[in-house]
Image (spheres, rainbow, N blue to C red):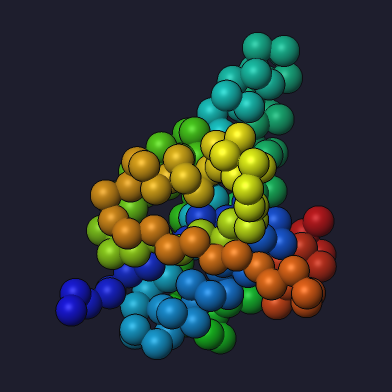
Length: 160
């Protein structure tokens, strides 16, 4: 059985991502692995802000806020596992797959919505795009819709 030394978990600070992050942290703890908490800054959004004349200050401010939220999320998970926050740039699916390769991740754990039937057929979810691009296994974690998510990054650290 392969050893898991590093688990990558992409987060967008949503409740769904929080569920995935909590599960990834629990798995990292059980495996004695490092957890890479990854947030991707979408280059198209940053490019659009520059095109509209907002320039670098808006992009820098957005990056600073994202970094603060990512570090707050890492602090929430730190009691569970060794967590390293990583901010990457680019389209989410490409950036996550690239980060998995760059940081030698053995596994990707992602929170995902549990869509069924026709909704699943009609949507091309980010998780499915990451699964197609990644060179390592991807575990999908669906939240239990009958209970509140186990943590809320923004509410616990005032980063909303």
